[in-house]
Image 1 (cartoon, one colour):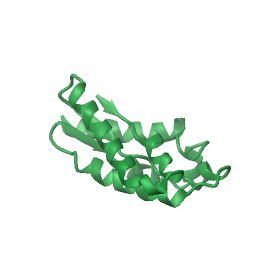
Image 2 (spheres, rainbow, N blue to C red):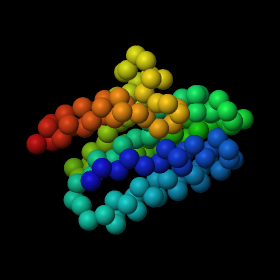
Image 3 (tube, rainbow, N blue to C red):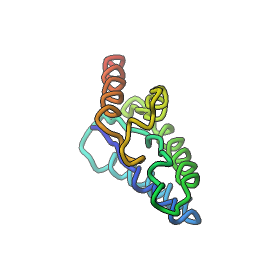
Image 4 (cartoon, rainbow, N blue to C red):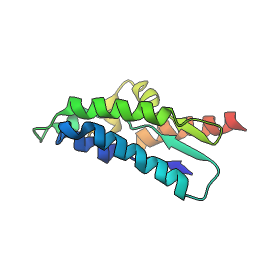
Amino acid sequence: TLLFVGANDIRIVASFPDQERKIVNDALSNILNLIRKIDSNFFIVCTIPPIFELSYRDYALDYQASDFARQKLNEKIRSLSDKNVLILDTTKILNKYKKLRELSSDGLHINERGYELLNERMLSLLTERD
């Protein structure tokens, strides 16, 4: 089971930076609830991809607050790793790409090329696991 959730939650921090801790904890709680409720004995949990300032161009929002919250949530997601939970670290994968901004049209959601990069790494993770 693949879980790729939380980016929209983290974006909310830009509008409500004073609620960052609650938003991060709620996002983690949502992930943990999904793991508990979904009938599966194996999960791949994705970290939250990099957020680009591009997504905040049209808004008077705090990009840095959201990115800081993303990093905090990603630390918590990485701590979930065990024999039944593999972590797909989207930041490590996507930051290797030279033209990072070409991986998203809105600065928050990755595009087809971004998913191709993640799929390549996910396939190698699954192969390594076997």
